[in-house]
Amino acid sequence: MPIVRSISASLLATLGLLPSPTSAQSPKELPAGVEQIIPRGAIPAVFEPHFVPAHQAEIPDGAWVLGVVVDGEARAYSLNLLNRHEIVNDQIGEKAFAAVW
Image: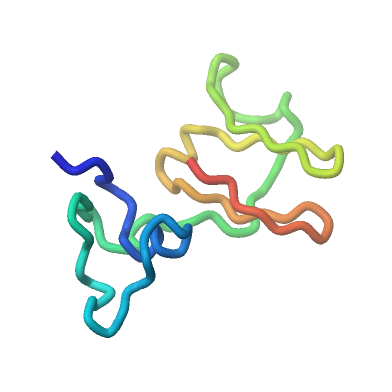
């Protein structure tokens, strides 16, 4: 059974976990032990997320969130949302970042 099931080879190479594809290895070839479940780009990322105060958020009180604090500013991303999108591209001040689930 493959250890990595849902991360594409190009993402692993980008993260430095695999060598970048060479002319001998096409980008569509997957390394041994990697199985691609869905095609690259099939899960849409969230760009320019909309935020509301916590008391206005339409998520259950017991729902899990992924929290981020940058330069003293806190953000919370609903895991229910991230289960469908997996990546939120956001920015606080001049610092751009991705919240990944």
